[in-house]
Image (tube, helix red, strand yellow):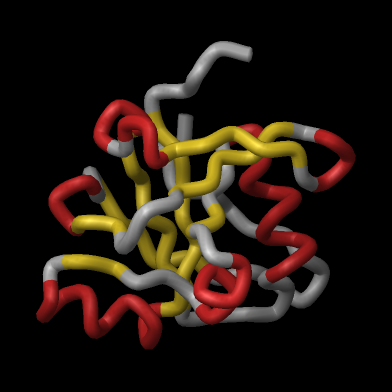
Length: 118
């Protein structure tokens, strides 16, 4: 597996709001529960949105360069044994977010991804 340039974090605008003040994102409740921050690659993103965010509005998609995360980024098997990027070792610094875009996911799980997803 070659490491992609960017990985993506899906969050709610509400969960992300405190990060705008503190400069670091603590993640979603599932991240705190699991002990690491969940990310998806571009290829994994549509399925993650369909399975976990169907029917939700008020979402943000954050793009983060893998190079910025260093050894805290660990690739671990998840859905179907596929390797997913997980961030260990604390919050995500906002200086590592290269862009963010609002997204909504239809009730059937479909979503139009931003043009910057690659």
